Length: 344
Ligand code: NAD
Image (tube, rainbow, N blue to C red; front, side, top):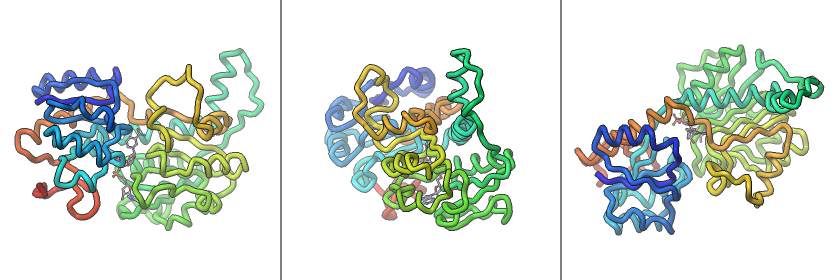
């Protein structure tokens, strides 16, 4: 099996080399992202392996299929960058549904603590022997209400972490999970109630037409003054312009973003020598109460290991059986893990 691996970073290679060798998968690493201009690189390969900021739109799918490539292995959980509707019946889309929900949930809490205890400011100050505490006053998490939107794998781990801090959790999910609701410290609520009552709001649902800009001007108007917004899910869940306006008007007390709507041309790359063209991102980053990390929440040793193992096993399972238990499918009109696998 020969796989064309797009958007390669040095930290990908270690574990993929190991699992590739173990399972007989021959990997050709390309630094470039997969898009309409680079799809030709997949010529002669049995499949392609991509990450969160590769573009698998209708044109790319058609090019891959025309070259005889009909397997796309996502080395991530989210698939909002794949035109699943167009892929249906043409391209088999495999993914890694879970690799370490702890990595993402723990990074979310790391961002929250850094922000509200002003660690990012204190770190810079003490390196300059500035030991003043003025302006570093934070607040206790104990007793605060956190709104968790999306209580899947990552959301649930984040709920557990918040419980450990003695926080109250208001949860919102399209498909609630009854067992986590104890009617007291963890309770499901309507989205409006969550927005109105939460001191902190954390997003853990997928990006879809339904969730696009779910935190917009209107939603922020419903929030408590000083609300802290955490987004480690997908950038376009938050309307960045509205968030910036909320920060400027002081309605939003702080924001921690591991993802950004227009991240695909910026994140994962060193842009330090370039003129930043994205004024919204530049303004957000300039704020003392905004912390941005570069889609880093997944990046732990454990997660990288699990991503490589599952991706390689997905590819091997598919080529050996023409089926894969982690195949995504559009068979019922929306993208989902396909258990039937009888679609094409
Ligand atoms: P998951 O599928 O286990 O959980 C998602 C939850 O969102 C589910 O409970 C689902 O019912 C809920 N949901 C779906 N539509 C909804 C809606 N319209 N409103 C409210 N809830 C809705 O996924 P997960 O593994 O917990 O991952 C969550 C998200 O985290 C992923 O979609 C991905 O975008 C993001 N993610 C980010 C990173 C990172 O490095 N920053 C890494 C992995 C995943």
